[in-house]
Amino acid sequence: MLHSIFTMIVNAVASILAGVMLLRFWMQVVRVRPPQSVGQFVYQLSDWLVRPLRRVMPGGRHDWASLLAAFIIVLLSVIAILGLPTGFDFKLILLVAVERLFEWICYGFMATLIIEAIFSWVNPYAPLAPFVRALNEPLLRPLRRIIPPLGGVDLSPLVLLILLQIAVRVVSGLLFGAV
Image 1 (cartoon, helix red, strand yellow):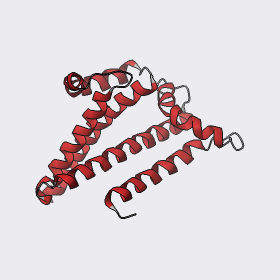
Image 2 (cartoon, rainbow, N blue to C red; image 1 turned 90 degrees about the horizontal axis):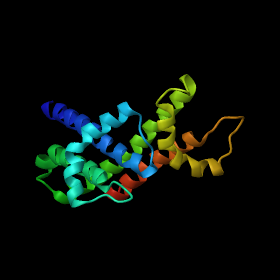
Image 3 (cartoon, rainbow, N blue to C red; image 1 turned 45 degrees about the vertical axis):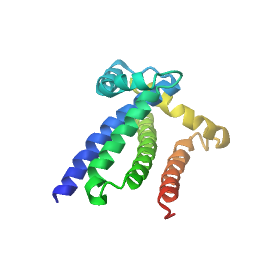
């Protein structure tokens, strides 16, 4: 029981921190300027790890330090959860960390798609709506070229949600050999 509580706390903290690091990376990749409140939150919560990592991995076109920071957080959370039970089997820990990072990336995209859908139903002119739309646009643009709107309804977010879920299952199956 204590282990499950510990796992829940570690996963919650790690997913928030890694999610912020991944958001920071993706904002820079798509070159979107966040609203001030979101930007302050993301940078204040991530600077403590990203800034020192920039000495090791300087930026360029992409903020690789943020992506590395997300991986480090995921790796530390997996070590904290699986370290003792597996006898610190680093191959397994590394595989689980890679799989979990990929899952969190996909879940982050799924979350932004759902948030964008909610904005479109409730208040398409909300202050955060253009920001979320800009985060999703690079993934939705190729699908919109293939899938035309049906009756004025854009089905590309639904298709992308399904594709992201398939990707999570395929990668997990490839990494752990149980497709």
